[in-house]
Length: 639
Image (cartoon, rainbow, N blue to C red; front, side, top):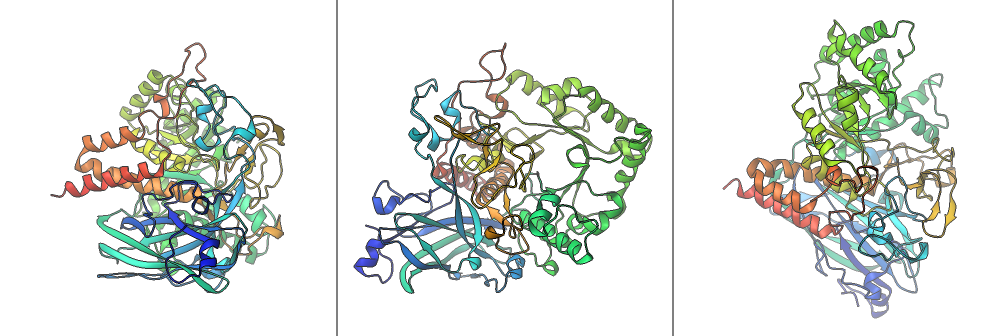
């Protein structure tokens, strides 16, 4: 029986149970762990009575409240977190009083979200292979032997056809909601500790009512520690969004060059809200190529930081700090590629771009680069383009060039390329390590990683373990990756697969060919994948208006929030490394003993596979313990 906190009748006690976790344990909608007494739900933030979390100044800490309904279900449920009060002040939030004010972050240090679910009906192919069952996320693994050979089918996977939490809808859009019988409902809380909040303990209560009666009051304790995270992220990121996909959902057409002025302005405001939401999560965005003559109108406020100020409705980490990255010709779409004299055109255009940012003297260091090619097989062409840039007699010679390709190939085949950007599942360790060391010591070179693939790293798949996105940031720290790139956050039409517009609020599958039923994998097809390319959900949907919230801005995924957790961990890693590098690396090594190219291949003659389990824990409490160790290293370093 759940502990009763606050007034409740015996009948109410039997109908509802409430507990919490830190959000990376993905509690499926069909689970009622506490009512069923199926497992001990106590964890690093929940002792059975109180929610306890820790945060640094300028950090956003999250927790997830799980409400379980018994046989009668629950109707007209409301949830709210009151002020968190400490000796040094109060952490509170004003409610959004309109759909527009949902994107005005001023004075909103506490945000509450009703979590929506997506049913996992098949295993993701782009995120992990299936020849070794240990590559599959833990809760979807079939019974297997020590070598990863499995038995059984789709129905033997513990979480087959379960509904996973991912869509964080502002509670203002669901002030009251129902919970069906024998189901649970997650309610996510983000608490931002601003520089105005002094270290100390802040206390408050979450109130849960059903049918107008107070069913639970859950105590919350937030310890603000005497550490401050920086405004300019140390962990550099790049996430692509698509204006075309955004425009299709919000204004009903992908291209708006000839649209009325009010439509163009509305589109710009909506895209800017994606930038602000990403900024709140310490993530940097880029999108399709912007002509240089349009830069001041489209990009200047993003790069000089004025978009992220109170005057534009922004409060949070990185206030007045710019986006810190700009891509020229995203995905190789730079427009002078087919000019009659392409080399001269390359020099002329790179000169112009190389002068743009210095001329505007943006205070935030801004990495600008020419995106030469994406996953091209034509290495000589990539090398020629990179050579043209380097040979430019003007300032364009200093413009970095980037292409996505495996790092060892980039070093051997495209030596003029400035920024090789790679992904991998397994690799020949010695080759990758040698290539990485070469890049780190070569003048003007940097190394990026993109996306993720098990068993080398976590992934952005909805069916991956909840710590997967957090693990990416730890990989970034351990392997000194200069920037981590996720290929898309708004892949709303699967033009590479089915060709269809995805029903984003009801389909976990976002990528791949038409799905068929496989007895082992469940729904599957060419490159079938859940959640790939979607970290923002559209607040307005003119493609599927029955799913639309009719708000002019995005809805976050929980996977974006999991990535934020890792990016904030990275700041702890940086500070701990400065205090005690050896102790910090021991923590890192204990958390990710083997990742990226350390996961070597089995057969040199066929360097495409490895039979191995992932090396990192999928238990969020283990990751929270590691974070606590980093906090201790930082604080001890001050003594």
